[in-house]
Image (cartoon, rainbow, N blue to C red; front, side, top):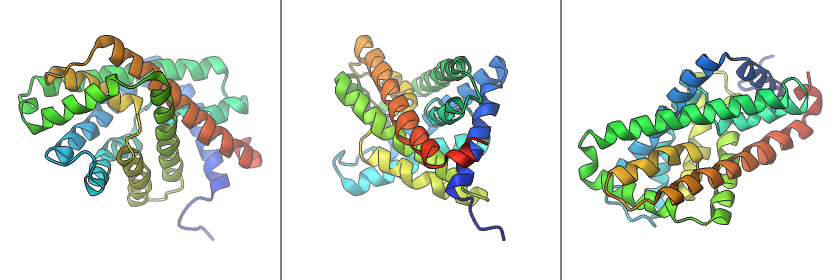
Length: 257
């Protein structure tokens, strides 16, 4: 009898199969889907800026609300279909079982990271030219961008690793779902948690860093680029090592099929 959700061992097999399909995408399609994902996460981050306007940054309820609003981005990626660098850390499962080559994995990550950057920065430029950044929304973006650009490497890597453990768990849970409603609810809580906790998501930062600069913030280029590099490394560590490899070794029989 079919249950209301796939079991963890079945999820492992589904994610490996998805990883094989992602690796096989033509470069053009992969890039377009990655640009969409960058914009989707940017929309979530923009909505977060609105939710946080006028809210004490240290307020627990305010941070939870902001996280719930930000979840829009990953919901659009998971339900609408797009290629997200952070979620694609789960492709390591397929690489470990030699269903895709290391080269194919790195090709996907490279193209998708670049596409995410294009989509996120493009959306930030659109918001910057819209006039919407002149008020409280812009003030939130400035505060966020300046704080991110000022993070040290160790903080950035650790916050990135913790963040993507939750993001990849959100994607993992979404594979358990048999309906769109279930997928939305599966994504909502892990994403709310990582935002409320103040963790670092490389693709969100691709949007927030230029947005804060466009809103008048002091966001040095060296600090912004450094943040993206260190947070991306942390995202890979947390998603590929903390989630993908752990589940691959927990469910080797199903994952290896």
